[in-house]
Length: 167
Image (cartoon, rainbow, N blue to C red):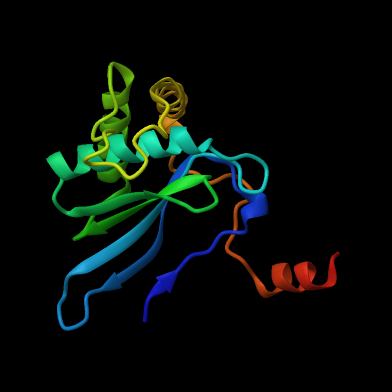
């Protein structure tokens, strides 16, 4: 049975990195995990589309070139973060360092990797400057990535009742 750790989005403080779901591939002992790299405050702010798209290109390219056991880096539909899929055992520190290295690759870049009409379905939908600014902000808060906030907690039955009753 998969483990899922859904935090109450009202009480998280980005940026943070955490496992959302960890499973074993059926018929094997191989662990796979889905990580949440939250970079904007849910229901309050979001990363602009071109910036998120550019960040996806940088991080996806970086991990494919350097870390074959990271399957993918993809933006969340809500545009408040990215999902990272890993295969094998990954510690928080190891994955955080890989993401930080990927963000550092953005800092001095002069072009967005794969941002052309042959390799990208929306080649003009990028913001290198925006991605550089976001990468710098995230790296400046690197020491906070391990903590989703002092009031962060998994969604409870009481939270859902509160939502249902509007109180």
